[in-house]
Length: 84
Image (tube, rainbow, N blue to C red):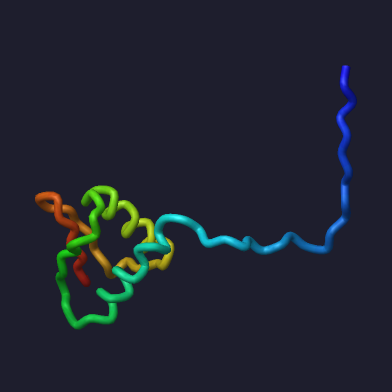
């Protein structure tokens, strides 16, 4: 039977991640652009993503940011953002 070799090293703190999280950060400009605009209702176009996938990513981002005033809907395979 092989013996497991390892070393335990004491540290003061955990390091921060050196990479960006995938997914929702990529779609942040969509939310930012909408919030900065005067429009109450917009359709998100030309993303080359399926509407339901885009909806999920934007919904997750809004939840992370605590944006309860932004309503997302999918109608006829199009994603709409609405300010409430």
